[in-house]
Structures are given as C-alpha cells and as structure tokens.
Image 1 (tube, rainbow, N blue to C red):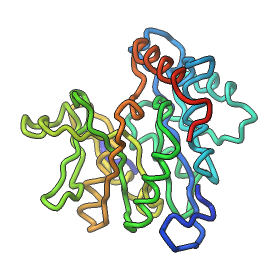
Image 2: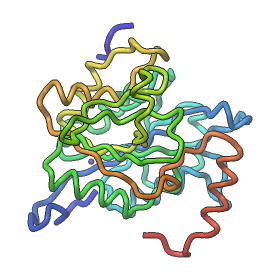
Image 3: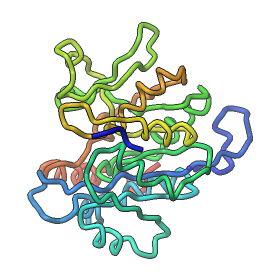
Image 4: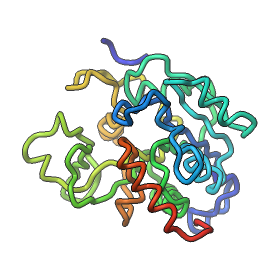
Length: 268
C-alpha cells in the first residue's frame, strides 16, 4: 500500500513564558481488543464501575484540553452513546490500519489549529495528569517538535524500543517484531503517548508507509521523519511503569481495578 496521503490555554509551563498555548488532545480508542475475549469495544470495559476510556478523558480535562477528539472504530456507536453529552468530538477509523492512520482521521477536526497536540490512549487508564503535565512542560521548555513519553519496565518484551544517540537524543522507535537482536536488549520503551506540534504532525503522518512486519501505518515513524527534517525530538521517562500499562487482557483489567481501588480519592 502507498504512503498515507490542541490544553494549557493560558500556560506558563515554559518557565517564565506567559504566552498562550493552543493545545488539543487526541485519544486513540478504535481498537477491538481481541485478547479481552469479549465483543465489547475494549475502551468500554469497566474499571471500578466506569468504562476505562472515562479515565483517559478525565486526564485530558485535568490538563486543560481545549478540544478532545476521540478516534473510535469497533462498536463506534456504543462508544459515542456511552459518552454522549460530554463535549467530546468523535471521528471514526473505519479500517484498522494502524495508529498513524488513526491520527490522519482527525485532520478535518483540527485543521490549521497550530499549537500542540497531545496524543493519549483510551486503553491506558492509569496515566496521571501530573505525568502528562510534566511531559508537556518538557516539550515546551525544550522547544521540541515531538516529545514521547517513555518508561523502563522490568520486562520490555512486546513493546517498541526507544533507540537513542550517544547524546541521549531520540533517533527512532522500533517495534518488537521489527527490532534486531541488539535493539531488543533496550529496556526503555514507547508508551504510545506523545506531544507533537500540529504543524508537523499531519504532514508527517501523510508520509508514513506500511513496509513493516504488521503491514500497518505506525505513528512511531514520525520520530524518524522528524529526525530527517532536523526537528528537535525529546523523551520524558514516566517513573512508574504501572501508570503507563495498556489494558489488553482480562487479567490487565483486574490489575488496573486493584490499582484504582488503592489510589487516593483525589488524583493529581
């Protein structure tokens, strides 16, 4: 197949720069979640009595998103109905062609907005708003084009690895199935959470091809594109890998529920 053809509205996160920032949030929530052993859309599975997507929406609101766009796919009508009246904008990814393809579906909702887009995942319900704020703060202070949230789990198997240069700069993200034996030794992984300047994002995803083991359009490829364009790429490491855990199985769902029940009543 050929290549595929904005929060903090008055932010002072740039340490002394009081200018306004136009920031929107895109939440990826189109997956079916085959390993959940249920026909229900993955993001509608319940954690402590709420659909897991609700927690990602909470995080987007907690960091002050001006606009929240949710990319839906499997059982899209059910997801829309569950969140009707919540002020969210929905776009549909009719074919599951990868995360870059999902982002491309939002281009009509966020055209020419400028500023920063924060990309969150609807199946990562434990992520704290404080972590997203720290990611955004770094992105702004470093004047980055792309900043990726990473973490260092005990076992990185199955995750995209963060390949860095000698100076610690991010060079690329390589998926497990495409990684060499040496790259698989890297423990720092991609969480799928990003801050990206919107002027760069949509041009980049339009350049992405699907020449990989999965035959999908990977959002991770924007890192390599940014590097080739000489853009600034940064990473922020989430200290607690549990916070960035994706929900893929019923066991993951149970662990997330236990974690939620142990949290303080008020999250940051």
